Image (tube, rainbow, N blue to C red):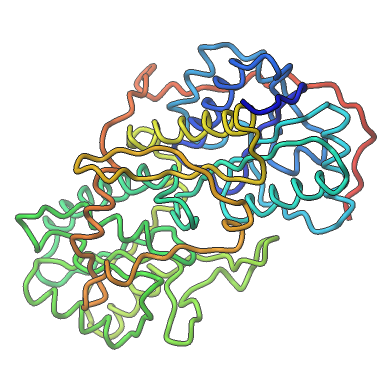
Length: 421
């Protein structure tokens, strides 16, 4: 056992939510309650932005029923943000808030950028001699965090996307007469993990099952090949079902579609429109009927169609973060998921350096993509199938899901308001 720090812990969520991000939050709260060195359990509202504003709530005051209900509640119960800390005074403000509320353990649930923020805060605390342990908890439907086999949130988005493909395909089959192209756009900025996951809709005994064509950011796109691909499928099937990742790029590495050139605070282009782009190509050059649909934020919020394996691993990641900080005395780390070598799927948690995660992107391995560039091979199926197993029991009231909502009992502010530029 490592030396325990007496004080309070703070947990926050950042970036795009997932169907299981609150399961990680529940894991943090449940485990923190088991340690006497943790005096109070606080939540930061709206990620790092809430910490700057000293918007903290007392999570220990929430009922156990509410905490349990977080396990099947989508979105970020604490609220989230896409705010990037850029100024040194912003980082100093974070430490001032931590010091004012005696925060000794900080758990940040988020993706690449969030882990980079946590790493910077931790190193600043060390440079100033402030006793603080910082552990990141992985979260992203994009599944693009390095050093972990997969990310909490990915199994559930795959399950939902593959289910949606099967449902739309039945509609397409009833409408198509060899003259219909149906395009579905899914999320995935720089990696095609979600698009690849829709291939799980296929049945092994029916190779002609949709999706017929999957376009990944990892494979450079050319209109000519796309049109040839579509015609090849329509020569054999009643319709052509296409899935495309929003981050699709051309041979020069440029996105084929963005939202009016807008960028977010992290310098990322606002993506959207790849599906519509493919729809127009098919209609204009092939003279056939084409449709485009976009899953949008529904794919990351579909708790009603989430994976039990994903949910359980998200919860374990939250628990593991607390144990790593308190029992093992770890800091500057992110929890990882390690796949067992056994024939039957199993996993355990590990740790990696925050700095490793902050600057990396994990792509779909080239060896998992077939030579045609638009389908996945057995190696991907072996990797992905176990992650979508099991259904989360969501309670219903008056015919709709009954999700949790935190009471959000505020912690008194101790500092003057922060000044933003």
